[in-house]
Amino acid sequence: MPHYTYDKKILVGLAGFKNHCAIWFHQGVFLKDKARKLVNAQEGTTKGLRQWRFEEGDKVDTRLLKSYAVESINNHKAGKKITPAKKKLLIPKELAAALEKSARLKKNFAALTPGKQKEYAEHIGSDKQEKTRMARLEKIMLRINAGIGLYDN
Image (cartoon, rainbow, N blue to C red; front, top):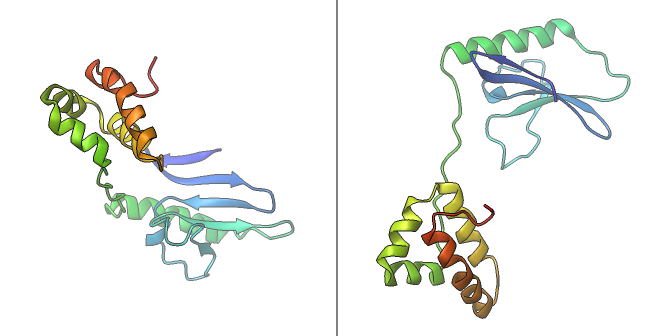
């Protein structure tokens, strides 16, 4: 989808959907929105992103659109931004026990990127049966010790 950047940061983007198209303001939470055009597409999930939706037949107020874009640039220049909160990595008990048992495994797991650590933790923790989680753990221990991610070749 097309997007517009300023200072290497995406400020505005366009998106097409089944019943509407939208203009996204990536730090739109800071826009004054006196005309009440902006909505949060995913209430409770999206913190900074706001969108202005257009359905068939809607008129685009280009002056208002331009004022929102200019305000976005000014907010960026002023340093206004929401940064996503980092989620704490939840290590399943089976993996935690294996890491405590083997210093080598613990060291090699810590050397992996946060994304690879998350892949392994979710892979083991996502199954309901302990038997399956243990089988998955056995299969991945060699990969962890080799410094290879779960989905690496």
